[in-house]
Image (cartoon, rainbow, N blue to C red):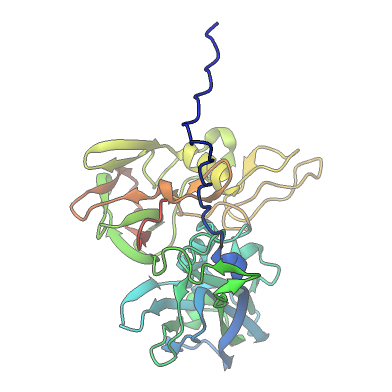
Amino acid sequence: MAAAPTATAAPATNGTEAPAAPQAATVIPFVRGSGKGKYKFFSQSGITLTTASQDLGPIDVKAYDYMRSILVTVTTTTKGGATGTAQADAPFNIFTNMAVKQPNGQTMYQVSSGYNAAMIQKYGFYRNYGDPRSDPDFMLNGSWATFGVRIPFELDLRDALGALPNKDAAAPFSLELTLNTLTNVFGSGQGTSPTLKVEAWLEAYDQPPTTLNGQMVQTTPPNMNTLQRWTEQNITMSTGQFDARIRKLGNYLRMILPIMRNSSGVRIGLETAGTAASLASTNFADPVQIVLDEDVKDNIDAEDWKRRTWEIWGYGQINAGTATTVAAGVATAGNASGATPNQGMDTARGLDTGVFPIQYCVDTREMTENTNFYLPTIESEDYLLRGSWGSAVSKLVTLVCEVLPQGDIFA
C-alpha cells in the first residue's frame, strides 16, 4: 500500500499570517432576480375559414423586457357544420404560415404549416409536457377546433439562455399568421366553418433590479442575444438509393425534424399496422444513415426510430398489461381483458406519421438542455440522410433548429 501523502509545510511568514484571499462577490442569477409574465398582444374574434387563405398579420409583438416565447391559441366560439372530416394535419393546419421576424426584417422562425409548429413544440423540449394534443383544452372534430401552439425562443428554462431583449416599442418583433382554407382543414363536406377566435400571448421575463438584498444581480439573460432559429427546407426525394441533403448550415445544429410526404402532400410513414413482430418500413428508408462528410455517424432502422422516440421523448409507449398490437391510426380499444391500449399514431403522446426527430440537445439521463451536445457545422459540410426510399416518397419537409451563440454558451 502506498504511503499517504504528507502535508506541505506552509511558507514562513516572519510571525505574521498571510492575508486571506479575497472572495468573489456572489451574483444572483438572472432567473432568480427576474419574474415571469404573460401578456396578450393580439385577439381577433369572428374568424371563419373560407375558400381562400387570409392573412392576420403582420402583428406587432408587445415590447416587454425579455421575450421567452409566443403562445398562439385558437378557440372555437361557434360550431360549424357537422359533416366534415378533419384532415390529417388538422387542426394545426388552420395556419399555412407562422413566422416571427426581427425588427430588421430577418426571419427567426418560419414554418409553412401550423402542423409543423405543433411538431416543433412536441419534440423541442420546451416544456415537460410538450405534445399539444395532450393539452386539456385541445378539441377536434368535424365542427370544432381548439388548440394552442408555442413559438419558442428561450433554449434553457434553467437559466433563460436564448431569451431575447424586447424593449423597443418603436422597433418591435412581428408575428405573421396566415389562415388555411376550410376544405384543407375540415374536408370538402364541411359545410359551414366554425367561428374562431385567434389570440397571441407574449411570455416574457421581467427586467431584474441591479441589486437584491444587498447582492448584485445578473440583469440580462446569460449570453444575451443567443438565438435559436427554426427554418424549413423542402427536399425533393427520389425513389431508391438517395441522399437527402440538409443545406444552409454553418451554425450549431440543435435538432432536425424530417417530415415525409407523398406527391399529394399527405404525410406517409412507417408501416405500423399489425403486431409488433411484423413492423416494416415501406416508405422511409430502412435503415437511414446519418452521414457527415462521408463519415457514417449513425444507422437507424425502422424499429430503432420507434425505440428512440420512446426512450428520448416517451411517445408511442405500450401501456402496461396491453396486447402487443400497434395502432395504425387512432389508438385501438383495449385488449380482451379491457386494459388501456398503446399510444396510437397521431394521437396524444403517440408517434406521428411521417415524423422522424433527430436531436442534439439533451442529456437523455436527465432530459435537460445540454449545450455541449449541439453539433457544430460549417457551410461546406454535407449532412446527409442516406438510404433506399420507397416509391411513395416525394418530399421531405425538414425543420431545422440552429443555435447562433453570443459568447461562450458552453462554459
